Image 1 (cartoon, rainbow over the protein chains, first blue to last red):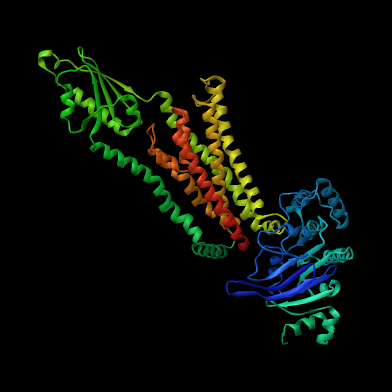
Image 2: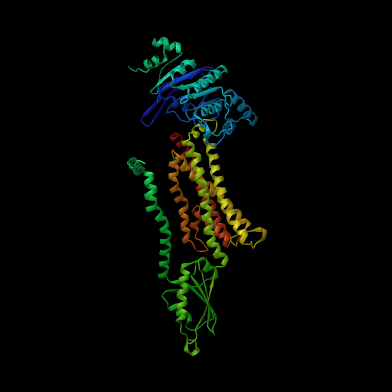
Length: 241
Length: 380
C-alpha cells in the first residue's frame, strides 16, 4: 500500500464535475507528479487529501489511515505547500514558523533548532522580516520551510514554483530532489512539463477530472511513441492540433 | 487631468455600485428605513403610552386627616380612581399606584403629595391632583373655603435612584458600544481577512481542528472587546476618582457619585463576560459567512443595528421597577441589571432571567458560528 492511496474520487461543484473517479497511489520515497492544466482537478484532489474538502464519493488513505471529516492528526505526517503561501503579513517569518511548529506539536527547543537548520538549508536570510515585506520567492521559501519544519515523511507540493523566477525555481527543484534523497514521499502537482521531466519518478496526467494515463516517463514515452512529455501530454488528453 | 476619462471611470463605478446589492442596502435601506424605524419606534412608544396615560384615570391613594369634601372632590373626578395600598411609597415606585396624597394637617390645611418623577403617569396624576386641590372649596362653616391648601410635593425616587437610572442607561450603553467597537475590527480581520489573504486555508491544512481554530479566534475577539470595555470603565473611573468619593469605603465602588456593592460589581462583570462572548460570536458569524474582508465589513452595519439599536428601547424604560420581559433581551438586560445595581441593588429574579437569557443566546450563537464556519470553508 502506498503512503497515500486515492481511490475512485468523485467531486462536483454544483453542476461542474471536478473529479470523475480519480485513483492513484503515492509510493514511499518517490516523487509522484500530478500533471494537468489549470482546472484539471489537481488542487481539488489535494484539498480532499488534506481534508479541506470532502469527496462526493471515493476514499483517501494516508499511511493506511482513512481520511474522514473531523480527523486531522494524520496531517502531522504531511508537509504541504499550497498555491496559497499562507505567510502572515504582520508576523515576522520566525514568528510564523514558531506558530506553525507549535501547531505541529513541536517543542520550543526543537522549533528553534529546525528554524536554524531550515534557514541555512533553504537560504532563508529574512527570518526577522515581516510577511508583508517578502517577495513571492521569499514567501514560497517560507511556505516550504513550514512544510519541512516537522520533518514529515510526506510532502504535498501544489504548483510550488508558480510565479517564481528561474533561479528560485532551480533552488526549489534542488530542494525537492534533496528531500527525495532523504526518503520523503512527494506528491508534486504542476502544469509545468519541464519540472516533471526533471524530478518525477512517476507521472499521472490529469484532465477534466480524470487520470488519462500514468507511469514512469519511460513507460509513457514507450506507450505514446513520443520522447517529449509535452507531446505525450497532448496525445494523452486527445488534443488535436 | 483628463476629465473625460475621470467621468468614464466615475460612470463605471456608479454602475458597478448600483448593481451591488450590499451597497444599495447600506446606502439606501439602512438610512432610509431601518435606522429611522429603530430611532422613531421607541419615541413613538413613549409618546403613545404618554397619550394613553392622559385619558386613563390616575390611580391615587388618599390618607391622613379627614377634611370634609376633600375625598369627595377626588372621588367625583372622572380622571381619578381612588385606591389603597399597604405600602404606598413602594407601590408608587413599582407603578402600582400613580400618586399618594397624605393630608398632614386639617387646620391649616396641608397635604403632602408623593409622586414618581420617572413615571409619566405619575406626573400626569400629580398635575391632576394639584388642579383638584387648588380648585377645592370646603365647608364654609369651617372657614376652609377661604384658605388655600398648602401643597408639599415629594419625590419617592431618591437622588441616588434618579441618578442611577440615568447613569445605568448611559454607562450600559457605553459598555455595550465598547464591546462592538472593540470587537468588529479583529472579528472581521481574523476570519474574513484571513480568507482573503489565503492564510486561513493554509492553517486549515495543518494538524489542528476547525473547532480549535475557531475557539482561538473567538477568544481573540472577546479579549479585544473586553479590553475595549474595560478601557471605557477605566476612563469613567479615572474621571470619577478625580471628582467623586466612594461613600461605601473599600467595599464599594463609586461610579459618577453612585456606589455599587462589590457583589453587584462582580455580577455585572460576569454578565459582561458572557455578553462579550455572545457579541463576539455574532461578529464572527458574519465574518465567517463573508467571502472577503470588504463583504464582512458590509455585514457589520446590520450587526450593529441588531445588537445596539434594541438598546435605544431602554429610553422608554424609565420606571425604577422593570417588567420581567426586559431581562430576556440580551444587552438590554445587562443595562437594566447595571441600573438596578446603581439604584436599589440587583434583584435575584432579574439576575436569574438575565443569566438564563444570555447563556441560551450564547449557546445558540456558538452553534450557528461553528456551523457557518464549517460551511464557509468551501467558500474560501
